[in-house]
Image 1 (cartoon, rainbow, N blue to C red):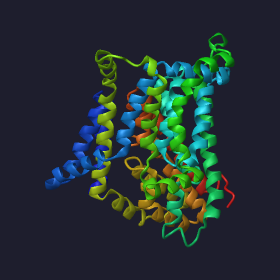
Image 2 (image 1 turned 60 degrees about the vertical axis):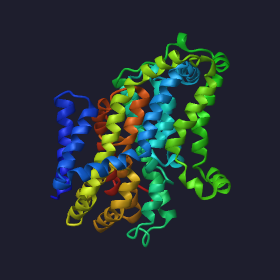
Image 3 (image 1 turned 90 degrees about the vertical axis):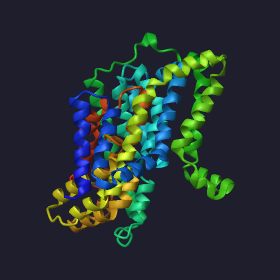
Image 4 (image 1 turned 135 degrees about the vertical axis):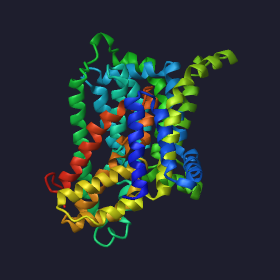
Length: 447
């Protein structure tokens, strides 16, 4: 095995030991893991560390996650969450686990338009995580569900990852967009169906009860008291609308090439914070001492989330500098085995790469190789491309480097490490299984 692969294995091992065995926080574990990776650079260890940190410090998701922590705290402090939860419960509160079903359905609906795991975690999580917590869900379970659903931004077409895969040299000559869209939509629906099954099981596993009728306000009353609190979600609606076709064309006409530089992950927290300040203006502190108390209460939330995100992205960049993608690809090209074995190995390869990177970056790096491996084993082209998208959709749930985990955990106010095992068992491994079942024809596609 190559040096980068050994570095990856040691990195994962150190994180597990530091966090699970030594019971230290995940921020420390990520720092130590990053340091271990850099040691594999030998005499270039400092250069490797600098390259990783420089990349992490320019990563927009790091800023976005920290902004979402502030946004969630501010909405709670100003009482907006209470009013929104009362309104949502007046509609869905009588359904046991209703908030989680709505969260999953919303993630699926936003999947194709958001096209980003971080975008889905941000937009859906900011609404449904506080609601789930107030309707008897544990915060770490709520964060796990939102992070696990974030992958729907890749598995449901049309996504940027789908078109990136279609444009690769291995796929373009044998597969058209029309052929892939139908198959990919069917594959995406299998992943959505599974997530509804997860919610059904979790409702019973965690004994989530329906909201007591005495706690549910009449819809008319809830609207009168909480309708204005919903205005803060214009900060979500506007960036999301700008990603759909009509909004993108309008933005392009107004801003020209600058439209490509607008990031939904950055603008959702920025605009939502501004909207929150405007809607909750009357409840904002009016003195320096009042603001000092607000910021002082909020500061501890950044200690773990900030360090974890920074060193997770730094580690991913350093592994890339060591040649992780190239070394894993070289191993894949030498394997000759039955379809289910090839599909399993392709899935593991994509999950391993997508964990520190993103699904889109992973498809750009190894999508062509994975497609060739699957079709050479006898998988139909449309099914092979769909399987790759399904595998890549684990990006939001793959610890320790998946950004949606930290966005969801930041909104929920929980240690991200509390979600890791649950995400692996309930989302990463089952999604791998779904991909393998599609590749072998057990789960049918219209191809």
